[in-house]
Image (cartoon, rainbow, N blue to C red):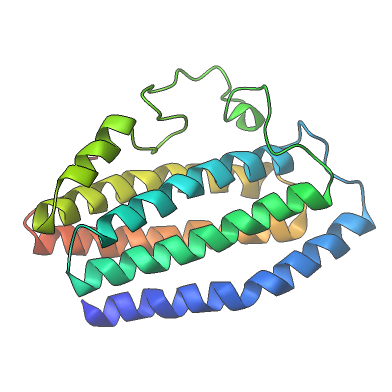
Length: 207
């Protein structure tokens, strides 16, 4: 397991190194053509994924306080660091494009899914945990906290991959599409890892 988690850590480090280059590149890309509009897929993905990522960061910090398991803590740290930095990029691009960070449109409108019924209780988009689930995670410790975190984060990544694939298909800014594809690849790798970690704890993903 340590070999696999170490591989994820290396991937996270590579992502952090690329942050500056991608941020600069989007300025070049955005400057060479039309700036995305507020209702574009580029802006919608940036806004929605920033919200989606924030919850992943929150869950990861919760579980780091609830377990001493080195593998889970390292995975949680990698996810928190990677997604916090990606979130900063997404919000930075909205600033660069002089677009609002919030919208009156329902989440996922840019994917043609704005009329999708919300799961409620704080779950705004596919894969997001509810407030009740977050409170439960905060109440658990040890193996129980590890299992719930891995299950919640697996669901979260599945929803994130769906959104990132939408950006790969619909976004027009090249480096944003590149980042979205990177999210697909990295989060699928983490899903595979978390499935193994759940099996070690005699558990499995919820779906």
